[in-house]
Length: 580
Image 1 (tube, rainbow, N blue to C red):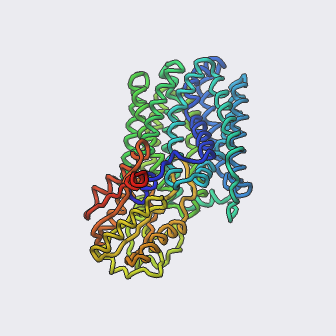
Image 2 (cartoon, rainbow, N blue to C red):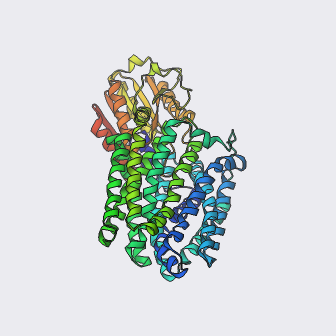
Image 3 (cartoon, helix red, strand yellow):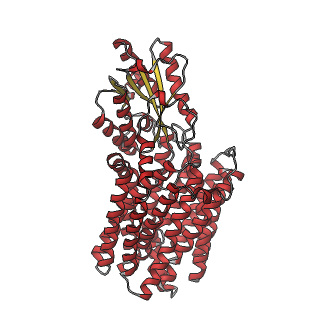
């Protein structure tokens, strides 16, 4: 639809090379690990004669080690390459998942989960980058596929854990080992080696990055949020008193809401409310939900409903906070992601163990009261960076006139949202008043959008404004280097060349820092209004299912905010014509 949404509509995100599906499958299995052990926690406690606080160490060892290992992932991958890092991570997961399943003591399982955490960190840090580099048909399609894998893994993990756990508590561990072995073989065979990055990442870079106030503040807020999140995830199964399959169904409902609101809900809320208000409201509602769990912990119905509903707030927070971190941070996305992951996973790792100890010292309600308090503390911490959230808002949304964008190679931390594309035949900016805006991307159908805009401009004696959204590689859980700025400029120049060859005056711009689907629609509409455009020419969605839903938020926001005519180009028309 818009530049961002159109690439997901005109190119099927699920038509990808086998290498992409190999890594995506591994992503599904990896994200299963988040909720996989929930249904078997009571069984492990009973059969291994372990206290709940000992059993919660399965979360603590896994997440704390993941957090620490995040600090070295950039150092490793920048020296051995993304494919070798990915293979090392998958191999470690296979080995330690199998050892955990074969273990006969709670201490052994906890220790092997720690090794699993190292593999998980290496995998998470590189999987998105490998999918983006290997995908065909557009960057957005790769991100949709990654987010789909994330959602499927989070939703299916508890159910699979419950089904296998009904047979034996060892089942989920061996199941992961088998599935990851398949993913490992597929990755070795199908994924091509990737070139080493031009610059090697230093070991201390993630910790040094935390000197930046915005990154540190958002990371500490995420620590508080994760404390509440993993208190619920790690300890709520005990007072429920359910069997493995029943627990699996409860947490599958939770995981489904996490996935839906991370992919669909968060972009719409951010587009409507902005970053700050979305985060404040989300943390406050999550705090009220955890408070309800604390008050009615012994009421099974209330407990189950609140745990499932908590998935809404977890999904929104994962997406909005991660994108805000990548926006405000002045360092490379991979370094910022490692620093952010280190801080937030520390909170998630310590919370379940602390919950068990608090129950032993006080009662079942106390951990959840503290979890609700941690969320309130997170709101207070976040409020100290309100100005920085506003800065992130401006970087993602503000429109800057072409004259103000005379330094297109400025650092990403201070780059304006709208950058001009240098072109020999470009016209003066004031000649673009009443222009026809063509929202394009690198897809095959984008040329038809530019051609249609050119015909309208010729008929009415107007200039074409070619606008392309530079897509940021930020998902709910990870970040990678997205589409390069030069690649975006090249896409615009190609359309400018064709238009000027036909005698159509044209101006090109790259729209930057647009991370949400709905946000792209808003920015295109605001750009058209700011330049006094007469019409916006966009591409219609051509696929159903997930990609059409992703397009909806961008298209609806564009329709709602645009003050000029919108011309819809149907790519299917070309296909029908060719067939005829």
